[in-house]
Structures are given as structure tokens and as C-alpha cells.
Length: 396
Image (cartoon, rainbow, N blue to C red):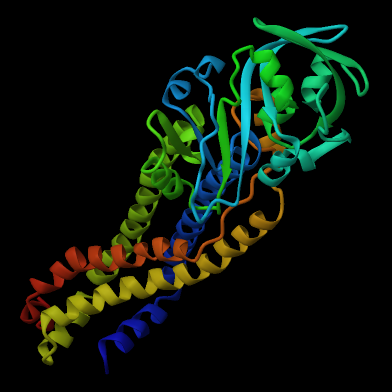
């Protein structure tokens, strides 16, 4: 009989013990899959929000503007950007301004955009809840929550004032994007109006560039090799600011935590296997006296641990991926994310969060099987390597 068959027979012989071990591994497997899916889903939602609503996949600006985002560091000449992966590009002009409605006054950041260029680049024009998107000078589109704060409605006038000038603009649209920066702080005006408000004679503060998902960093790096002196491109991850540090900090906390989960599950499996080996020392002594080498006995124990944890792994993968599928297709975390957006409206969070669904998570979770086998070889296995068959066979 092969070691694998013998190990499997011993696992099935102790059904209750195997079931308890499997439950531990099931719990850890589901936890690992879910936490990986949640972390990656959160990261994807951030990239989606910043690339499609808050910023752009890639942004090109002067090095001075990255240090101090003031119009005085804007672009007097729009750069020619050439790259095979660029899908669209459009100039933008960002500036701080005072927003005056007939009833309220509030500061904010005004985004001057080319209406048609923005349609090819951003999803904001397609999230207009009331009214319409920009079409000409003299108009402004607001985030719907900002409009509520300013107590301004469609058709009313909003005065946008900077240190260089002021314009009275008609509110023609209210945007509801489900992204805090847009809904609570979005102010979109025609690029020509923004140029007049800047009073600097600049054409734009930066150029927003659309590239395929996942190619942002590589395109930005390649653009930097060919951009004129003084210009610098950044990918979406570099545009997130503090929220990126928060996300990376979460990964630094959760990844070791998941490793600890798997280690504890493997220790639980091995400790039970150790007790089982202690109870069966006489059986192992008889088997060794019949000619089976101690190393093969230790390998059998490692196989038993791997099989017991493998049963739990399979069940955990089924349950874990079922949970990931559901949370990746249903907005389970919507209420929590909407509360987060209310509390942190300028963080760039989205009101929707879906978990990621990737086969590689199963590979990560399967490490618990390898850990169980390794620890079983190191501890109960070593007990068998030092076994003296004569002591147990004689019944002493």
C-alpha cells in the first residue's frame, strides 16, 4: 500500500478529528480569500474614482505645478503628447476660487475643461443628474451636494471669484457621480472662462491623458523620457496623495495578519496530528519493525496533515469564492461606503465597493496545506524518527 493511500485511510479513520481540523482550515481559507478580495477591490475602486472622475489616468504638468498647484505654474504652450496607448487627451485649468450664490459663500477648486474633450476623457459629463453638461462659456456645472450647500439651483447665477477677476455663471447642470470629490466639491466651467479667471495668460495648468487600465504607470514613465524639459507626467497611483498611503498602510497591516491566520491554522492541524501520533506510537513501532523506514513514517504523518488540511481547503475555496462572487456582483458595502463619503468627502472615495475575484487567491490560501505538512514533518515526524520499535513491540 502506498504512503498516500495509507495516509488517506488514517485520515478517514478519524472522521471527527478530521472534521474539526477541516473546519479550522475552512474558516482561515474563507478569511484569506475575502480579505484579499476586499483589499484589491478597494484598490480598484480608488483607481476607478481617481482615473475616471477626480483626476485622470495620467496627468502632465510643469514640475513647479506638482510642487505648488497654482496657475502661475501653468502651461503657456500645450505640449504635444505622442504615445501609442494614448486614447484621449484634454487640457484642464484648475484654480482656487470663492463661490458666491445668492445665499451662501464657499471656497473651492474650479476645474476649467473643454466640454467635448472632457466627454472623451472623463465619466463626469455622463453623470449629470439634473440639467445638462457644459456647452459654451458663461456656464457652470456643480456637484449636487455642493449645490445643496450653496443653496443654488438650475438656472440661477453663481459668482466665481478669484484674486484676478470674477464671473457670474449660470448653473446648467448638477452632477451625481457617487464619488466624494465630485459630488461635494465639483465645480466645472468652460476652459475659456477659467483662463479669464486665472488672469495669467496661461492655456492650462495640466493636460489630462486617458490610457488603458493598468498601463498608467508605464505610460507616464515613457512620456517622462520624451517630454520637454520642465514637464513631468504622473500616473493615477501618484495622483492619489494621502489616500494612497492609507491604502498601502492597510495592506501592510492585513497581509501579515492573513499570514498569521494561516500559520495558526497549520499549528492547529499539526498539534492535533501530534496527539494522534502519540496515541498511535505502538502502531508505528509495529509498522517500522516490519521494514518501513522511519523517514517514510514521518512522510506519512506529513501527508496526513496535508490531506486533513486539504479537505478544509477545498471546502473553504468553494465557500470563499462563492462569497467573493456575491460581493463582487452585489453592492453589499454600499451603505458603509456612503457613510465614509459623508465623513470624508474630499478623500476621493466611491459610494460603491465590490470585491475583486481572482484565481490567485486560491494559491495564497493553499499555503496553509504546505505549512501543515512542513510543521508535521518537523514536529510529529521527528518523534517518529527517534522511535525505538523494540520498546513498544515488547509492550514495555
